Every structure is written in structure tokens, then in C-alpha cells.
Length: 524
Image (tube, rainbow, N blue to C red; front, top):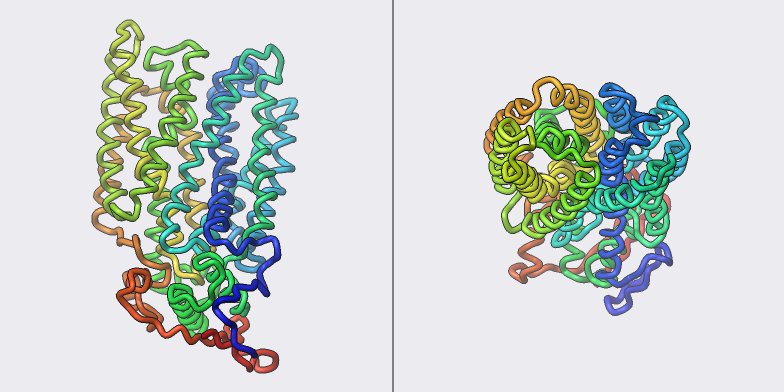
């Protein structure tokens, strides 16, 4: 085929709606993260707000057990989705997974808003949970594989940072509808949850498929174009683009040659794979069992035990807490590459557990609400705990798992992580209302002590992944990088000269295509 001149960044394979301006495209990829994350964040704070509303509590959530089921069933649905999500996005693509997740939301959310009894509400939330579970696998995998190295941490970090964006929207909506005297006080917030899913469907036509997924499925020329428009405004001969392409091509070829299959059992086939899965799933356990789930879903109960029983005041605190967490999580996203994943995870957890101990102690002493200064101190520690947790762990929850998983393992590995994450969240949402009711402030003390063990685990077992491409992380976990391409950071800094002569080969699912792609495309 003819040579492709670097001055003519013409998109031949990527969809016409996908812009060739790198900054605009990165913004759209980030937007796809945000709208998917907002659905989860909205749900968490929506249930927090609804559980405070008397009209909802009297109609749907009759007691502690009912409250646990209403909140926790969404995680059951997400666990079910995790069983098949990896296979879906490996076969049909990362974008297809996000689209299907949004369509599932369009089924479950209207049913949730129209619920006439607890059973209907639970079933509808199970459906919503399936959509959230699929989205939780597809979107982080897509962002990790598509965002350029210098944007990957920011893109993935914002994914869960805007969990609080969705939470803020839900807190504001439930606060605004609390004065409605009919069931629309809780039905309207339920219905508005569909907005992020709608925005997701609007954004999807304007973003490309994951270049790593394209490479694995024999669409090398399209993968090269995606790398070029993501990082160099379409210039396929840019040294950074050429280096990325070679790293991905070599690594995918290595995995296919070594028969690394994309199935659940392969996740546990080798010692290195088991180590990768262990690191990914550690985020699921640490992130959900550290105490943040209590605040996310049962802030009203916490505030009541702290001495704040006024519904209006609780809703206002819910809004302020969402704003605070959004700001701290966004700051943590900016510093993720500068601090490093391991230091950020251990440091954030170490500081936050101190504040969780303080929440428990202050709740014990000032829970009667008679000492106003003590009540304010309790609320301040809740804010400080959530702030330090959000700075580190909101960022890392979705950033670290796809980074430590290689391509063949990534989709199913993120599915396994999501299964454990939702399972842990399910345990928290079902068990903690009873713990708070039975042992009160001691719940925080037990949880903070568990957090000490989590810090030790991070220090001992975690590996550093910052400022490395997904392919370069193999060197940390496998002992070698499966490509002879130079380190991308060195190329970006101009420390290494790159031969930009590149051949794009015909490869289909690990087998050389001997019929249609014997020819090569040379980019010079």
C-alpha cells in the first residue's frame, strides 16, 4: 500500500464522528468516564437521601431489614453482571459494554421510580445493579486502554471522583424534593437517575474503540489511527505514537503466541496471573471495608447517633459532604502520578483511620446531642475521614485494578474485581445497619482497627504502576517487558530517538491473516 504522509492525518478507519483533535477527544473520553460514574454516585446518595425521607420510609423501607435490602440489592445485581461482563466486552468491545449498560438503566430506573411496593422496588434496583455492574467493568477497562499515558491517571481518577458528582446531584435533588408532600418526593429523584445513562449514549458515537482491543482483534490500522488521534492530532509518525503502537503490538502478539486466553479460568492459571488478580481484588476489599460505605449509605443513621436528628439538617450535611469529597477526590487525581499509587494508598488509609477512631470516640461521648461542640466535632471528623479517604482511595479504586492486569486478563480481571467489590459493598450495606443499631460507636472502632491491617497489606504487597504504560507494567509483575520498544516516558522527554518507520501487519485473533493482509502499510 502507499506511504502515509505524517502531514495528512486523515481518518480512514475510525468513525467520522470521532474528532481528530487530541485534546477534544481526550475530553470526550473523560466525559464518558464521568457520566458512567455519576450513575453509581447518584444511586448511593439518592438512597442516603431517600432513607431520610418519611414518605419513602413509610412506603418502601419499613424497617432496618427492609432498608438493607433496598440499598444492598443493587450490589447483588452488580455481582451477577460481573459474572458475564468480561466476556461481553472482550467479544463485542468496550464501547458495546457501556452502551448495553446504559440501555439496561433505561429499563430498571423507570421501574424503580414507578414502584408501588417494596418487592417492585427491589426488583427494579436489581436491574439497575446489573447495568451498573456491566458499566463498572466496561468503562474503567476502556479508559485505561484508551487514554494516553499522561492522561490515564487523571481519566481513571475522575471516574470515581465523579461518583461524588453524581452524589452531589442526588443530594441536591432529594433536598429539593423533600418538601413535596406526595410520593413524588422520592419518585422524582429515582427517575432523574436515568440522566447519566442518557448522556452516556450521547457521548459514545464520538469516541473510538480501545486501541488495545482493536489490536487484539486484528484491526491494527484502526488501532494505529486511534493512538494517533488520541496523542498526536492524527500524526501516525509521531515518535510517541510509534512507540505505543510497537509496545502494544509486541505485547498482544506475545500473549497470543503464549496462548493467553480470555476466560475466567486463565485468571488463575499462572502464579503471575494469581498475583495480578490478588492486587486488583485488594482494592475491592480495602475500598469497601474501610468504613466509607457506612457514610455513603447510612449517613442519616450516623448523624442521628451523633446527636443530629433534624431531617433538613441531615440533608444539608449530605450536600456539603458531597461537595467536599468531590473536591478532595479531584485533588487526589491530580497527585496520583506525582505521589505514586502505593504511597497514595497507604498514606490516605493511614490518615483516614485516625479520623474514623475519632468518629467512634466522639459518638460515644457526645451522641446524646446535648453538647453542641461535641456534635460539631463529630461531624468535622466525618468530613475529615471522607476527605482523606477520597483523596487517595476514591482515585485508586478504579485506577489500580486495570493497571495491574495485562490485556488478556484485563476484562475478566476487572469483572472479578467488580464481583468482589460489589460483594463487599453488599456485605457492608446489609450488615452495617444492624451493627450500628446493636453496637453503635463500637462499629467505627472495629472498622478502624481493620484499616490498620489494610495499610500493612498495601505496604507489603502492592507494586508501583505510576508513569508506566500498561505494557511497561509487565516488567514489574512478570520480570520482563514483552516488547523491545523504548520506555514511553523517555520518548516523551526526548531522551530516546525513535525510528518512525512502522509496519502495520495483518493479524486476526492471534493468527496471521494469509489472504487479505499480506501487504504492509509503511508510515514514514
